[in-house]
Image (cartoon, rainbow, N blue to C red; front, side, top):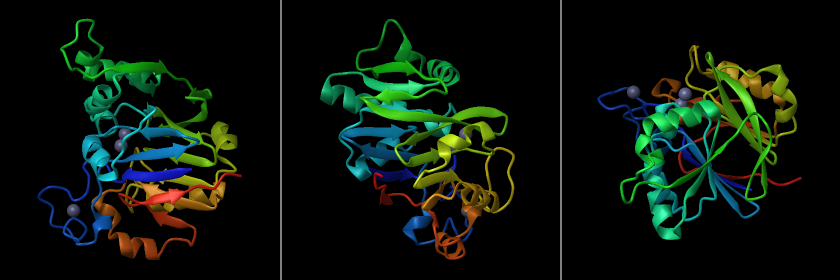
Length: 256
Ligand SMILES: [Zn+2]
Ligand SMILES: [Zn+2]
Ligand SMILES: [Zn+2]
């Protein structure tokens, strides 16, 4: 399985316009973070998780030409607002884009993108094929996906396990009922917003504790704000099997 980090930043992205902090003015490319999204290639099935406002730019940067399905974790703007940019796939392959969303996310998508779901559509409007998902295993082109219910503050949202890869963005806590789905993951990707606590996201020290609990071979942190600090400095002080992800990072997850 190949995993490409399309974006690793929080909702504002990094750098933040008009901010002159050391992170926002850093020359290290790893301190420049588009909104969080990931591309997973496994068993000839290609999946994108979330389409934020930088989706188009991420498609161009990674030269992505195949998407078999888009999975949504939740309906916040930084995870859905790029959906309009599926049009290039509609035009090229002459078919709708398969998207997978929970009932509440579907409701949000229908509000925000009413023109996509209108009965009388503007010519050239995005075409999507919606599959409603619950906290139950589903398949994308035969590839098994296990949703994982996590808390994002008060909001219940979904993470996903694909093979031995577990992806948990925008997480403040994980119910014990989901533990069995997560144990045994070789790689866990987890929210770590910044150094100090936040009501709807894990912060770095708590993210480290979560990883120590599940003990994957490797863990990568995502959804970082400029308050996380410089990539190089923060990563140097992490436990040996934990890393800060960065935009464009590609990893392989070996199959067992
Ligand atoms: Zn977010
Ligand atoms: Zn800043
Ligand atoms: Zn969110």
